[in-house]
Length: 146
Image (cartoon, rainbow, N blue to C red; front, side, top):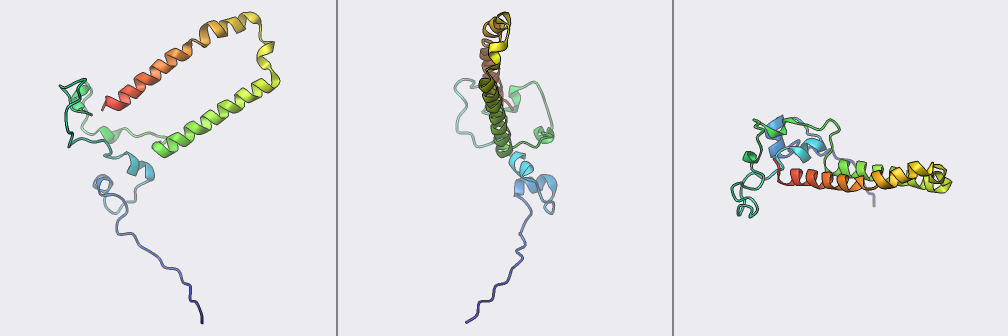
């Protein structure tokens, strides 16, 4: 008995999803960024208007004073979509943790002048609340904005 193993070349029927092919062309392969970015925001078939703003639909273009023919003209030069963004954020947090570990191992804050340490405690630490507020504002913009 013999086993014959051979490889097959499978040709895809199409290069990308239909909504991306309408923008790029049916014979153009799309990147993961393009597949994850183009026409993913819901624009139809909403069940009800939001209770907090019944004059607008969810993701209503009339919510902003900015008018554009195509909202997908803006592209991220880093080509972040959900996967690449979360990987980059995780790497940033790991780097920050390594920096904190570096400082703690060498007890570097003990060498700072007490006046500077007091300024850090009085000014820099409370600024984290402003940063948190800015982050919440940005989340609200990306959640309800168009």
